[in-house]
Length: 542
Image 1 (tube, helix red, strand yellow):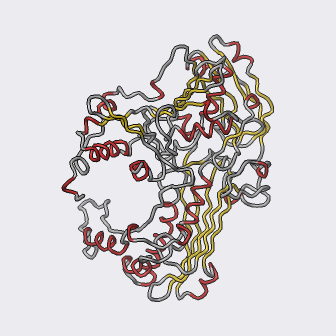
Image 2 (cartoon, rainbow, N blue to C red):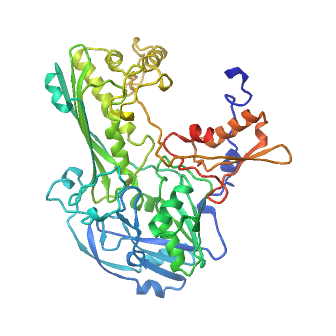
């Protein structure tokens, strides 16, 4: 079907949730309330690394309105997406300033906030380690002495007895040794600090652990099915006993994937007498105690022939994963196996290490390792072009993967296909659009500089073996349809695009296609997660 034949696709369509969001009537987890709803607050560590000697909460229990107090010893369960290294609440050790060590459940938030100030935690400080380079030295203080006993997903390789949460190595051809045969070798170090996702809505969760053993959860996550499965696995509860619902979500950027507070709030509900409990994070609490984005360092070497062809590339990434592995180990692994990007490299060595440090744990963010590796790679290409006296476009075009070439590392050597994109053509068109050969006109303001640059990258959509998707379409008596999908809607517009696909396929007016903004494992068919640039493509084909 040609573009001109589409009735809906390609036309400006306001998102259907726009009115509710701009008028403030959209309901997020923070806005939800139930009869008898209790509120939780967390006591967090003031030490970066310390043994917990004692927790005295007797005064807090005497405060009117306090329903329950919990410590890590009440909930001896382990969390972890790839490495089961995290307690629900710290049991023996606190691993960063902000690590939750206890929780209070009260009749309202104000009482809970007063109660946490009445809890006395006695610590025995231990030597902390904040620098990832120092953390991986043999004499560094060990954060996880039981690392060898943790549950670990098969693709990941933590190193017991060290602070290495994951070690990834990849070699192609002669690897780094081939640099000796290059005409020109450049070497550079790169550093990127921690950042926060800073999504508008902080992490909020409500859980209701019923006396029947069933659990209902409302949470600001990117998916209902991932937290359901991971909560069940962590607590040893059958998956079918848990229902997860996702209402409106105020931004995510990868930071609300997987699992976080859901098991804790569920167990607090049980301890509080099988009553619903809400845990809402303030902005300060979010920044201090919730996962952020890993900082990293890269040491790169690239060897060229005089004509600009790459001879070999070597890069070592060191990611600062913080106190727990979370998604950081997979972000770092992705940066490692995608290290050669869009270029044909006969020789490459890529190493990626995730280090435990006494900082907040780190998690996923948009791009998931690809921006990290491409920033280093593209800087090296620009530096190489300058050293060799070549145009940045020329040096790239000399090294691009061509159709049928096996990818150097990403995709495990599968050949480039026509539907993956014409690298040379896209770069050429981009250069024409920005008038690459023409010097940019400089602004009048002396503090402003106008310049041109180019970078080329690839991005693999996330497709693990369990990443299946489904959709249900219900036809109503008035010729409208209800579309049931578990695709998250947190600003990226995927759900609106799915509405347009359905309207186009069935030749319906867009107003006849309805979607619910409350995703639920009860009525929405299975979707793995709304992550990794995959949802419109995979759910759209369901």
